[in-house]
Amino acid sequence: MNNSPDKTKVTAIKDGPLMVEGNFTVKGVEGQVLSTMDKVFLCRCGKSANKPFCDGSHRNK
Ligand code: FES
Image (cartoon, rainbow, N blue to C red; front, side, top):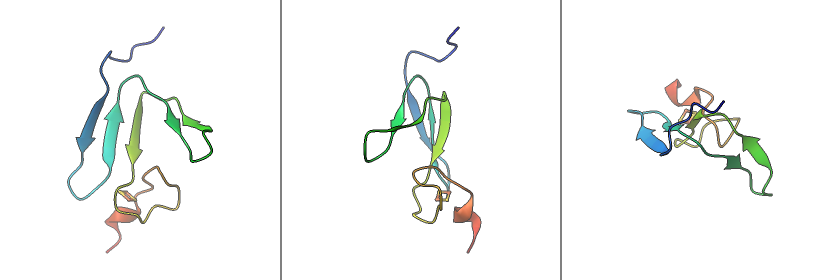
């Protein structure tokens, strides 16, 4: 059973990642599926070692 909302929502977290919620797929540069989860956090600081996902590195000053 899919409990994801129909719409996908993207929320910018202050000084952090983009939180994406909904029914979506994250694909890599080769088109490979990276995630089918219904909530992910995407790095927007460029410091993550696990791009495109946030790994918490944005907290390091
Ligand atoms: S936003 Fe969290 S590591 Fe970049």
